[in-house]
Picture 1 (spheres, rainbow, N blue to C red):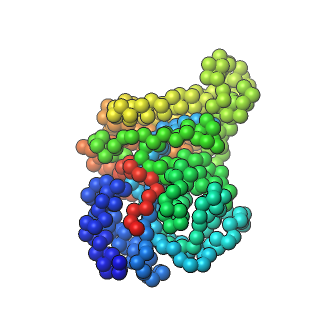
Picture 2 (cartoon, rainbow, N blue to C red):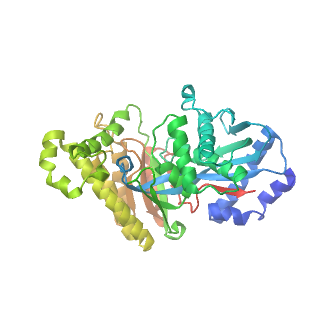
Picture 3 (cartoon, helix red, strand yellow):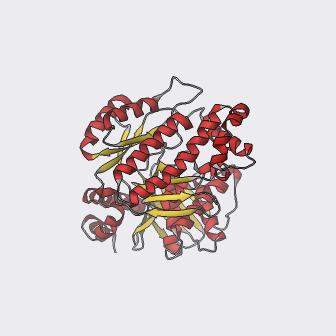
Length: 427
């Protein structure tokens, strides 16, 4: 298909069925058509056009329940969202992969060199190299390709733009060289491997799994090498609510110690019982031993352990509520999870700077607006950054106005849960 003909096909209804699987609503489909045309033009300007351009997409993600539980082998509930990274791509001869992203310089890697380069840690080129290495280690095919990518997954918003990029590269490799035979779960595991080993960041698996699988995803990390993945069948588009994320503007600078302390406190309690992580600790034995734990470790580890046990249970409760199509019960558990994070896990504001309470203010305002009508909680790691809310459609306008008046015009994002994960959209 020639360029003019392909752009016409993107503009009309030719690919509507494919778009609907990913973007669901007529409004979103029309927006994506223009976005894909723009991306296709970028691709043609950079590489020249031919008839063999494939489009793939990978979503950002939101954490729904299981706040700071994954690092102690707990359970989480996460979901892919409607913001995504998209690539126009095609196979080429040779052994050089070229990936150009809007607003960033070209990345080039040689597929004959899939070794770790520690001097290149934290560079996007090494994510690409790591994804290729992971495919090869698992016996899958890789090859040279050209790609132009764009992303509307907001960087620094807690929606995991990095996982979306990793899964995007994995989806390209799956589409172009493996006939889409690599499972979504495997692509997520390869993405974690690439980020850990090649990018130099010791992340967990939640972000990549939610992006790769899509929809609501329950993940049980009891066996971290073989996590149990359960995709939850729930049509968010019909529940009457929007997912709203508020970036409160808090700085993540100097918070590394705060994040680390959560894990350290939980693992200190596990060590008290001769275990490595809390998932190995008997809950009843913990409650019988609180007096001794307080004397030896202090109060904060006790409270954070209580949060761990209860949020693990709430993951199951939220999953069951979604399966039963009981969104009210689901939201009640979202609120309880948020309160537990605030009161017990204590990751809403930094202990090092208790006067910086952006998230506390956002949660208080959300409760004022949504009490009895929606749900609200801290989103992700906490201490600074973002909060999450499920807002009924008739309150979205009010919610946005009040939050933006406090935190700025660009602070609030209205999202939905995307039903699919990393996917070849057009070929």
